[in-house]
Length: 235
Image 1 (tube, rainbow, N blue to C red):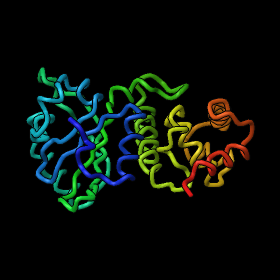
Image 2: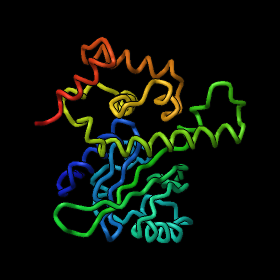
Image 3: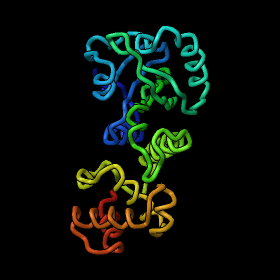
């Protein structure tokens, strides 16, 4: 299954790559709600092979009891409602996996009907990522963990719209998703405390990300890093 056979814009292609680097699931469906692409993460979660899903209705990946609700959510997504939903994926063996689904209506460069790109987060994985010091099983802690992960994802999905940082440049290939987020905000003029607040991490963690970036790209200061980024811009 190959998303790139569609004529997506460069911006959308960049968003897809960011989602892939984060390890999240990804489903692309056409205007008729048929599957055109699922990434390896979704295949691993559901136990299917790509050839079994291509061209099938998205409903095959949803438990039967949620399919009426799926139709309503698809209608809302096609009307531009991009809010994250709580849902479930149906495995090939019939079991259900709780997930968060973040849909996005996207245009295609070939003037065909738009598509819907849905980012899938395994809530079981988020459940395991408990904040430091949180009480085991504490509902508030679990909800905070989910909200933080989703907010981080929503921020990451906007990265490719930042024209000041050429995230698709080969020189950026070694940077992690979190390091790219940090780099975007640094180039936007934010200082370490503001970057930490934006990304819901500590200033110490931001500094560690910057040190890692320095090492990977061969610079020794924030000023040199910004100059390095600007040197990569076309023209």
